[in-house]
Each structure stands twice: as structure tokens, then as C-alpha cells.
Amino acid sequence: MPYHLRKSLGQHFLLDNNIINKILNTANLRPADLVVEIGPGAGMMTRMIGERVRKVIAIEIDKTLIDNLRKDLSGHPNIEIVNADALHYSYEDIEERFKVIANIPYYITTPILFRLMDVRKSIQGMTLMVQKEVAERITARPGGKDYGVLSVAIQYYSVPEIAFIVPRGAFRPPPRVDSALIHIEILQEPRIKVKDESFFFRVVRMSFSQRRKTLMNCLKQLGLKKDILDKAFASLQIDSMRRAETLSIEEFGLLSDFLLVESF
View (cartoon, helix red, strand yellow):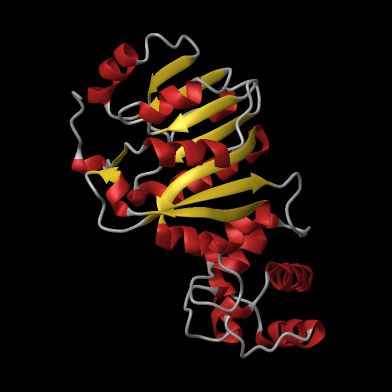
């Protein structure tokens, strides 16, 4: 196979047919679907997706792979190969809702996730191969060390689940860590209603900014007066000595709404 890996792009090709089939089954593909595939690599999964759906848009950043992909997949007119950076691709220009399937390089996983969340209203669901550790952070519940800003940000807009773990030996070359397939169903409306999403996420980020510190100490950095913070914690019956990792999304919502009203 005339494909040359580029370490700078974090390329690890998935070449196991059984695992690819499990991925596509998890994605719950239908014949009428439009699928955006990020990182087709050698095109093995791209071909198998194309056999199940109406159209595939495969986004590949590596120019050295494009000619081979177009040649190898030329017999599949429903597959469009696009040479572009998935972080900056104009998903907004796609005129219908689509599903996302991706084998994401570890070093850009979080930026890609946030970029896709920006266009979530156009997405039916996402099935993503990510580093196992990242998958655990995305799906983490309050109370554990994995729960953080990424957990809250993704779960605010969606329902993420780890479908299965993929051993490093399934890739060529094998990465240094195991991977996990995560399936993300986008919610029609955010999990909770808040008065100002920007302020809500500001409160979340600040709360997690120093994980070993209490909520009171972290939220002082918002520039709020101590009496306002005291009032918020007392009114909402949230212990100011708690740490951010113990708060549910609902509690973060109540806290941000209260602070917003009292501060402005």
C-alpha cells in the first residue's frame, strides 16, 4: 500500500476490518445518510462507509495521501475527497445535517471536538476514535479526577458514551496508548437552561483553573466581591469549600445564573 505516514500529523492507520465494522455499526448508519469522515488515512474505512450511505465527504489534511485516495476510491462516485484542515473546514456550508466519523490524531482531539460542537445543530451524531484517556474525561461524572471542563462542555450539549476500547495493536504503526471509540448524540437543546452560556462556561473554567483549591478561592478570580460569593453559596446551599470536580452541570448552572444576576 503506497501510503507514507507522517509523524508530524500523528497518523496511525486503522486497518482492522472487524473493528471498522464495529465502528460503523456504532455510528448507526442509514442508506440516506451524509457522513463527514475526518482523517480517512488509507481509505479503508472510507470505502466501507461509502458502501452503506448515500454520500461521504472525507476530509484529509495530508496532501501526500490525496492522489492515492482519489485513485483507490474512484469507483465510488458517492465519496468526495477533500484536501483540507478539519479544524478550519467550513462545515457550515454543508446544506444538510450529517453524521461525523473520525479517527482523530491525539494532539488535536480537543480543538476538533470544540470545532464540531460549534456546528452541532448541523450534526446528527458523532462517532470518534480518540485516546482512551480523553474518552474517559469526556464521559466522566462528577466526583472523579477525570471530570473537568471538557466533561462539562461536551455533556452540556450532548450525551457521550464509550462504545468500546481499541488496543493499540489495531493500528499501523501502533500508538503508545490505547484508544476508545466514543459515540456522541447531540441534544436538541442543551442539558440545562442558563441565562448566559458565555458566563456559564467562564464560571466552569475558573472553577477548574486550580483543581486543588476550593470553589471560593477559584471564583474570587472572577473579580466578584466576597459578599456576593458568600450570598450565592448560602442561597444555593453549595458548600464554598467544595472543589469544582464535585459539582454537577446543574449546580454550575445555578451558580452561574445567581452570580450573573447579582453581579451585573
